[in-house]
Length: 118
Image (cartoon, rainbow, N blue to C red; front, side):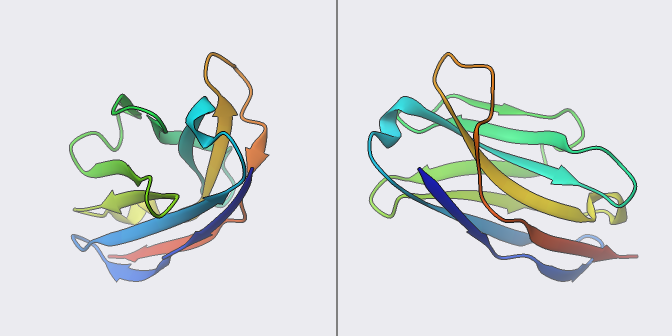
């Protein structure tokens, strides 16, 4: 599986952005897709995940109610809709994939930078 993320940019606090991650490869239905972020000087953290073959989702507490992860299987794309953005959401956002039932996120796309101004 290969992943290509896009959609980052500069937005004011309270605004919205939608990130996209296009996946290519075989057997995508066997994967869980996720978004992670890394802010300057901080460790990478989990943001959200979704089963490629189902609707099950998971979110970090810090983004619950503001971010929505979804996937469009016809376009092989996973989205991260980010609303009510805060300056602390500023980070490099990366998409990732792991096998269902696996523990390691073993496939990563390049990051896309999100900057939220106050």
